[in-house]
Length: 69
Image (tube, rainbow, N blue to C red):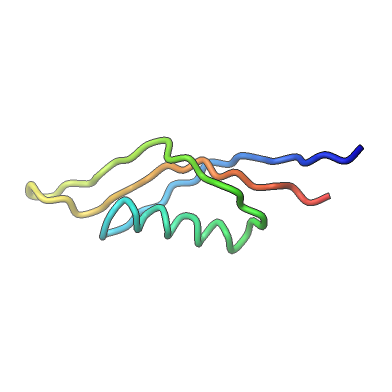
């Protein structure tokens, strides 16, 4: 009986635009080295502030992907 095995790995991504863009950037980059990504969970969101303005958005993602085999 065959089954599926998935793995979860944590990545951090930044954007100078938005949280949504940081998520997109992170998933696109992860997709360059990891195949079969099935989902992601935003574990944490942070912003970098300079002179009272947000200058960067950062997300910590847990990315789920199916292992080959």
